[in-house]
Length: 106
Image (cartoon, one colour):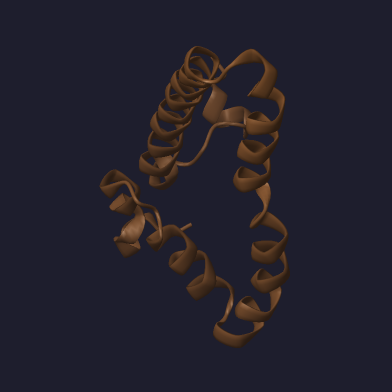
């Protein structure tokens, strides 16, 4: 009987900790997002909500272009694997560091 692993679309076992971390991280981000929007709707007057949510969104995405612009020079300066490990190292959540072990290197 064919399994997901034999079809080639299941992650290899060494990436399982990373997959589990990303799943938990995604759930946590969604829980925070719902709580944040609920707090905004409850605390911000309706006539000011549009401006506040615009500033909120701007603050959330304003650093993405800078990070994208810096990614390529950093990768060519220190190497791809080191850049990816460094980006993973910035994860604020300790289980994200499960990939620090060379056994789980992707």
